[in-house]
Length: 435
Picture 1 (cartoon, rainbow, N blue to C red):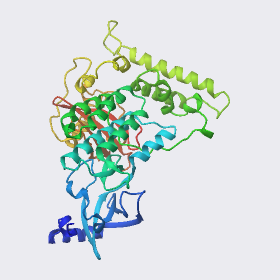
Picture 2 (tube, rainbow, N blue to C red):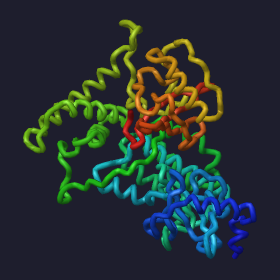
Picture 3 (cartoon, rainbow, N blue to C red):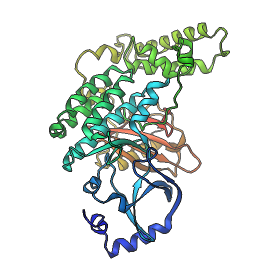
């Protein structure tokens, strides 16, 4: 076993730095498994919640061999305290298998964007473990406070398995609670790839392209469990209380992308209709669902402005699901040869997001189609002149950034790179609802 000081790389400069850190940390409460991967103290460091773990409990811990990983839990700092040292980790919300169980037992499945985030993180974390020579190291997958799954070495108890083995089971469960067929097809490829971790790094680009084609990544939310009453199956009107229920119902007949669009239309229609708790609600639900389906189908078939009578109706994703998944670039190419907007060629997604938002400020209601800004509602933090942009996760050709401003709702902006051009793919409220 290595001495603690050697294991954490302590020296005089580290000790002086961590003394200042100690003064900036406010301890909240002690926690232990199963509420955390390791016994420790939940604390607040500035605006961030962190987990403090006694360094003496981490002697011989496999995680010391991981440095700078995005999807494997590794120390963010080490701080000195009376009688020893504490390791500072990003705070963790809950085990990923617990989140799977809540979605399986309740009324909420996985949103497509959440499923993509979870599966991509499982693939990347497994690859990071293999790169560090920790293929057989046991542990468990947890969801970080920012909605990003990470592998925690040495957690999960006696039944814990390797990152790859645990990831395979979780991908199967996530796919089983997702209505989108493209996500399910991509998940099958991921499960197969996870069986051979040594070759995983060579397939990451291919696997991620399939997942990003299905949906833009979205941080994992804390979906509440809503079990069926008395163990009985939920009626159609019960399932349709929210858009997720509608998406699940129509997802059996059409692709998940179209199902989610129908769900959004249904939420809008339902908000305008009076509805008692029980009496007469079934007819209203059926009428609302029919109206939602009609609204989406008409919207998909209506020719774009300026295309004239010869315009071709757009083909919904469902008609493409049986064939090979199209490339990411093909899915976002502009439909008409409109003049290109100013290129944003930076490699830095935060800088790219800032440039796109500045472009949005300037273009007002006449934004270029290839920017992804045309037709979007500009409100919340993205509309504030004092906004700040920070990286949530970088997936290479796709990135998620947080946009914050004083007095405005925090938002999550999903951007993607197509050739030399960055474009906006999605904009969400911080709680997960699309804005």
